[in-house]
Image (cartoon, rainbow, N blue to C red):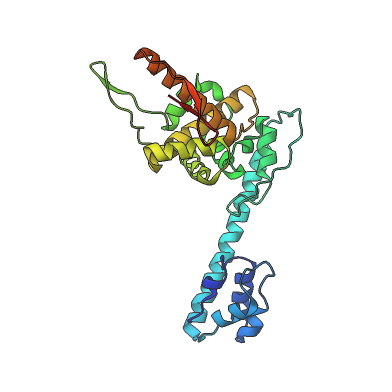
Length: 290
């Protein structure tokens, strides 16, 4: 219909988009009147939205639009029914009675999540707040728990757990020589959810974010995603098995520890070659090694 609604509204299934679409289906054709349905939080002005709604309204296109809206509403009802069923299942799990109440979280819940407070249910079931881990949303934790369960005794160590997920480095050895460290192919839903979570670490200012960016610069994005997902899996294993909480050490502390570890390795290598590294002050005020 030559309408540019998707160009001025970030999500046409949101409040502004669906309000305008339903008004069109009810017979409204005036772009100015349609633009008044714009939500105040919309970035574009009413005039911009009105210009995007100047088009032609052919009957066959309106019929197709009506069919699409009804399909969206039907699937939304089906999703809501699934959420109710999932919530009913979660209520049947044993309450581990965590000692401390669940604290508020600054991160916003994504729209792709379930329609109920899954974080509270997960905290009650596991005794730990898995969403303390940066990049782990309640929906991701729910997917992982739904795949692996709550009994972590089936994996003796976190490395066994990572191997079962298909995230641990491979160990293809022949004649005592390691031929490949590639991870094995896997269709594990928990591993896929952790890989998706690892993607959001690229912009994170946490220690996990610094870890991911360092690996990405050295190994490339695909290998860094797998390595970061493996690290997330090990953290989840320790939290679920030992009931330990997670506290992010921060990007600055991670970088400082990485630098200290790098210096120790350099000094060790220099000593092996018969040299000694000494710290000197540079013009920038930082210490340099000679």
